[in-house]
Amino acid sequence: MILLDGKKTANDIKNEIAVKVANLVAGGGKKPHLAAILVGGDGASETYVNAKVKACNKVGFDSTLVRFNANVSEKKLLAEVKKINDNSDIDGLIVQLPLPAHIDELKVTEAINPIKDVDGFHPANIGRMVLNLPTYLPATPAGILELLDRYKIETSGKHCVVIGRSHIVGAPMSILMARNNNPGNCTVTLTHSRTKNLKEITKTADILIVALGKAEFVTADMVKDGVCIIDVGITRVKSDKTKSGWKLLGDVAFDEVSKKSSFITPVPGGVGPMTIAMLLKNTLVSTDKLLY
Ligand code: NAP
Image (cartoon, rainbow, N blue to C red; front, side):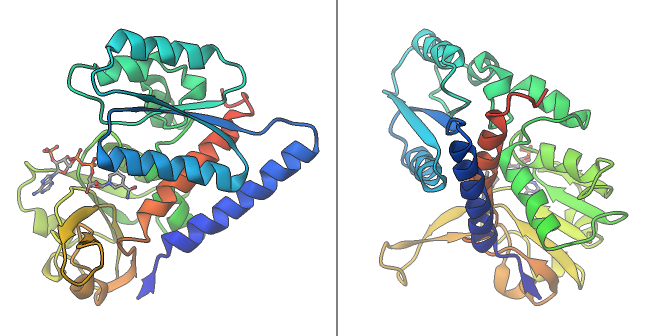
């Protein structure tokens, strides 16, 4: 079994990006600049945004964090998006999701200029992804492709099973694994909560990508020998063995499933760090303005 080390791979990517930024600046270019909008004080969102800003600083990007109270009006938020769209110094913009219930997430996502949409969530960019055109790929699926690529895992002709069909992970992942490209060229089965006989399907997977958000859902009896496992899930559970009093679990029962796997991502330290690295990669590309 080979552990797919997302932490190390993400650090390699960050170092590569830092060199590119240094060269860009040495050549008289401007630093890539990412703006992030955070609405409300939700703990997880705060943690994610802070990690993104910190990562920007680490690779030499400029970053701007705009904070709003949870009760900010949709109009005010849209006005800020427009302001950042119109600011030529800012290359990439992300609005941390989820947004409070009174704000229409799709409306906000659609308000972002697609050329600055480094999360790759704008319908225009999703459309370009489906058509296999140059675009910003959503960071988590892009990070998984990068891991498969860097570990030279063969995907062509394989059966890839994806559990979960969210707009940010499962659905785009299934499209990317089926595209005529490398990594890609899999035969893909996309499964979800209404799928019947899930275990019969997962047992036929050469590559199993799990993103449903239920701790240790995939057990050894659900996979075949030699499977490649990509565990996207992150669930915080109480633990009396850690100083913080909690620990993170993936969607895969790692100890038993890893024994049957050829490759497997750990949680933490697998897909999570790759997601941030891919956001940085998209932001670097956004300075080019030549994507479309
Ligand atoms: P989500 O929006 O909650 O979607 C979950 C999906 O799983 C849905 O499509 C749901 O089916 C499906 N599902 C639920 N129960 C199922 C079952 N028993 N059998 C089969 N499918 C089932 O989740 P998400 O946003 O994609 O996130 C999934 C997990 O990944 C979470 O733990 C999240 O924290 C984590 N995550 C990690 C990263 C990272 O960077 N590592 C990034 C994003 C998300 P229906 O569509 O039928 O409801």
